[in-house]
Length: 257
Ligand code: SAH
Image 1: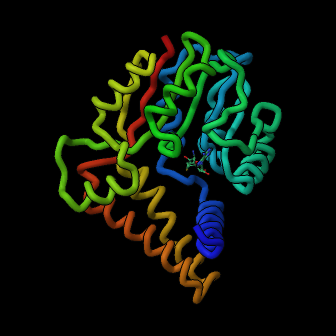
Image 2: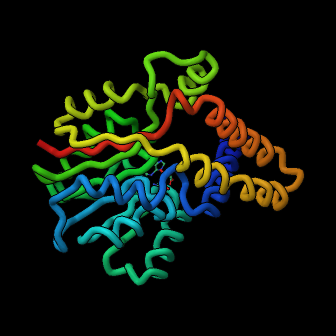
Image 3: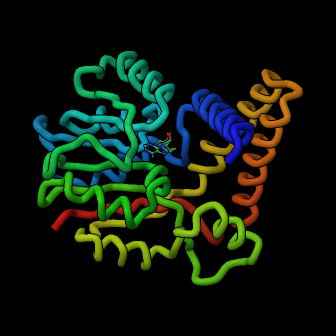
């Protein structure tokens, strides 16, 4: 790759980061769904060690800390997100129980068997569902839990347009029973799965982005890369509205055997 390409790539990365920094959540989800997923987990005490992997600016981490005991370590690759994450924890006076670390989910800083719970909303796709479940397992105690949300197909078949979009964006998207089988094979008891309601995308994730997009375009008026990025985000949202009967986000909760 030439240097020119590399700098374009880095610029895009900065655009993505700046855009999502302004949003409360960087993926679909709500406090209610975080609390619902938490209701399947029964092993937590004030001594518990929890990791929130791909935590972003910490929307779901703050909810976790307010509804579960223990100490939470948020992990994200983007330093700006971790900065905002720490500020959010401090605002809620949760800084004693919530730590943030800039680190890759491919190289986690935990000891074997250290964790009681691994949380990851809308982020495991970055390493891949199967690889993440397999590689992260060693950090959990026996009887520890994993709770992740992941894009999944609702049906065996779907229209070509949306199939092609996802094969390009994330070919590991699969049906719920296939994902559950992967979880079982990775060494977890599949404890629960549930589909995130549509309003997590429509009212929360995408609707909030409508104003964010306008403001972002205005701020970067004339910037072609920003325009292309926003067009891409709009396209993704439009596809969701058109094909939401066929896919969505699903929470998968498993217990390490
Ligand atoms: N959990 C948050 C953010 C989801 S977006 C929420 O639900 O709102 C996905 C997050 O994964 C982003 O914050 C992104 O910075 C992070 N990420 C991407 N690749 C990563 C990697 N290799 N290691 C750690 N975090 C990563």
